[in-house]
Image (cartoon, rainbow, N blue to C red; front, side, top):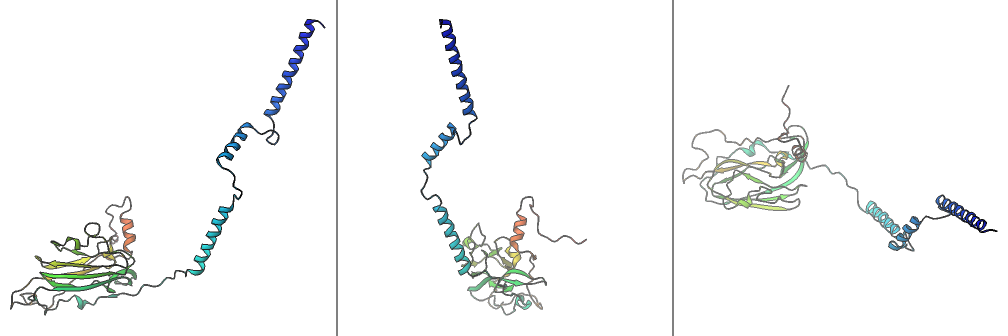
Length: 286
């Protein structure tokens, strides 16, 4: 064989080797995952094995958590009694005679401490014929008449047996030197939590007249927590009496808002976006 033939034979062999290499590359390109795993998959498996070593019991924690959840659910269902709805105790309307001022009230008595107790609880009442849940003082709507003379000390023990926090604000009272007894929640006082009690105690001096008290939490005043407060002017000795002119009867007329919707729902509507100053008043008659 000549040199030329030998070169050509080498060229044929090179071509056959190149052809075989191309076919192998094509085979690798189209090989299935079962036949030839890819390099990227091998790398990902290697990384996963390095960072997350396989546990010999991979499902044990999940089984334990599931078993505990089922166990405590059964305990809750079996041993905890179901929540039964108990109707609210009925309230009552205050007799009109409770707001008639007695002419025998002494305005010349020495300064003293006038003590009252408010037991606040939720009741069902229908002041105008429509039943609704209300927050009442001593089971009665409206609240009791508080009557005292100027320079007396007013002491009111408030027991909150209602499901909501509450307070009592003494409307119009100066509270000179006793601003922490004002009952304005978020300003001077924290509200009285459910199941707790607080005693308001302050001196009423330098003012007389007819005022009122009410809750200062949300709109609880419309739920029934309102009542009148009368401060009599002191008379000199021998000048006892409510007025210096003849009268047949002196009584308190209490006017307050009353809605069929409980105050939490009204507050939610009133404070919702776009409802600024949207008072929950009934529509005018047609």
